[in-house]
Image (cartoon, rainbow, N blue to C red):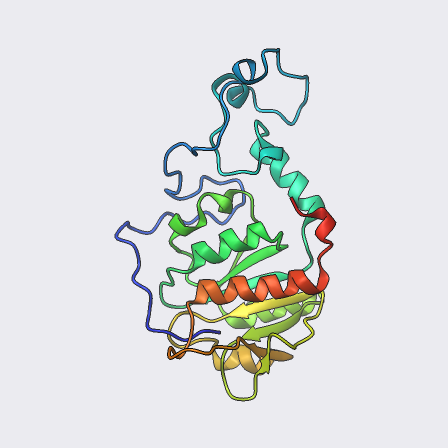
Length: 239
């Protein structure tokens, strides 16, 4: 994974832990979304349909959430259930033994690409600001250490693929990623821990051509996830 000097965390204090999917998320609602919709009757001029997926409050007051148009007015539970039908079999893990400000970005990108789950290793607390509320729709698991994460991978038949620009790594651009895999990223600065690299079946690197030694961890995660999408996803299912 990219190794850079630590990204500056935002000035807001860390949000409380929210290990369960439907627990309140951190302070990530940044006001109304400009591309939302108003109350149903104002938008369509009719009474709303009788659909259990629809949220009465959103129907009455409008929906300004950061969701695709197909999910307008849906309850959070209905959205999660629908995404669960469409999730891909790759998982994403990021080590958080310090306080990595990139985790929110990783969660948001994992949600966009339909990752099965995001795994946070080490500290439970992470800055949810970059997630832009997508943590409400993404399965997120916590593991106290790398050993427990690796046990999860074995129990669920996931091949561990470390992403780090280190000697001996395989270029991501030419690597064949396993379909059922766990893409593992280290934190800013030290990169993937030695224990994680030793357990990985494959370590891939991202080609770079400029002067910087590495790229941002959140960006690296997005590139790796999209590489999986290009190899395995059915693009007919994309929005």
